[in-house]
Amino acid sequence: MSYADRVFIENCKEILTHGVWDTDREVRPRWEDGSPAHTIKKFGIVNRYDLREEFPIITVRRQYFKSAVDELLWIWQKKSNNIHDLGSHVWDAWADETGSIGKAYGYQLAVKHHYKEGDMDQVDRVLWQLKNDPASRRILTNLYTFADLSEMALYPCAYSMTFNVSGNVLNGILNQRSQDMLAANGWNVMQYAALLWMMAQVSGLQAGELVHVIADAHIYDRHVPMIEKIIANEPFEAPKVTLDPSVTDFYAFTKNSFTVENYRYHEFNEKIPVAV
Image (cartoon, rainbow, N blue to C red; front, side):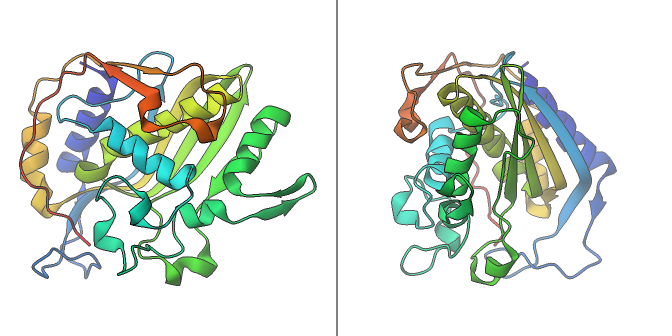
């Protein structure tokens, strides 16, 4: 089986077996019919993925890799907060009548800050540091801006990425306050593995480890039967993923810069309810 499958299955089994339910509390999320969306969760899950060994795409359920990359580029490359700039509909439930999700995600990455080297936004600052000061222990981004939370349609879930160079290897830590295991886990892991790979390539480095730190890893009550079906599937071997080596500018990448070969997966055609 792929390594990503093993991690995903183990995480889900751990949550289902040893997790804690919040059914004794009032919760914010609601299902479409207005019912409270309760979860079973585990606190403080940490997963490590070595991109030199395998690109992390699960096979027990189909993952739409290029759509995931498209969303990542919407946030990190276009630095947009408007769904009209996005090729999928994953943000539709949180957008207003103009398509905006407020001062969230891409909006935060686009804000320029002053440094002694000049004014840069968070993405350009990371790119500058990786090329000019790779020994720095200050290479990170943060989307959780407290002053702007009231103007965000959704508080950032994956909110911080820390980059660290060891020798010629670029490693990264993704910090996530909240993780919907069914709807988002496989998706986020693919995205930030792709980001680490792109950042490494344009900086003349090799992508190494992605460490994924999840504060609240949960499964929604109505997702439990679906998760049980998915993790009962027999995993396949990991697909081969390649990145166009000719791209040396982060802003020149597209979702088609990646190629996925020999991806075998289990179809999952049930509609997944979304808690908002």
